[in-house]
Length: 36
Figure: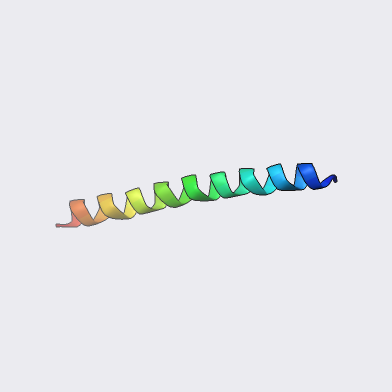
């Protein structure tokens, strides 16, 4: 694996992680809204 691939791989991982985090936060917010 070249350093270039490793770098783009990490970038992709960060993007996927941030998207998952946004979904998770949105889900929690919705649960709180519905809970009230």
